[in-house]
Amino acid sequence: MISDLELMELHVNVLFRHDSENRVIAVNEPPYVAAPRIFIGATGMGSIVRYSNSLDKSTVEKLDQVIGANPGAHPGKMIKALSIDHLLNNVWTGPAYVFPDVRDRTYSRAIKITHENKEILKSQFPYTYEDFEYKQPCFVIIEDNIPVSICCSARKTSKADEASLFTHEDYRGRAYGADVAKAWAAEVQIQGRIALYSTSKDNLASQSVARKLQLAQYGTDIHIS
Image (cartoon, rainbow, N blue to C red; front, side):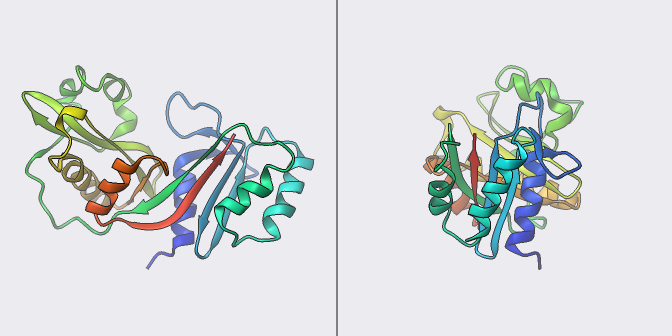
């Protein structure tokens, strides 16, 4: 069974592109914007830390000392320690989850989007349509002849995919999000990869979907810019 720390390692590699020194250089999806200056993936087994390649060596050494002194610290304590030298412009935190095995289930409402039918996305999800090559697998639920709920791969590697889930406001409360996410996760797992899901601490609706899906939280993300 894969550990929480191993899941966090997969997660950070899905989220960001790295250089040869394991520094993060860009977000792992088009248009590949700059990665945060610091990423901390905190789990009950320890933390995984990644620094941007934009940070100088002395800053990295100082941060290593702060984090290394207490690698099991609560994320809030880490943020407080890291803010001592006014390094922080923005802090984003949120839970990170993994899907259980859902390969043996069927989801009749979800439609798989392929190159043959991707025109379905164009009216409601134009950005997914434009970047479709990078967003597979992708599933939608159709209501009133339009796609109202979508789940696709936001970012991925050969080992894991990170979910991107959205349901239009007028169609929420009908379990569409949970259904389409399960269909996506099943396809990711059938293809031999791990299905991951993360969100911000303020996104209570997204966390509610995670509970409905019975996802297991393996850690907490901290992005510091």
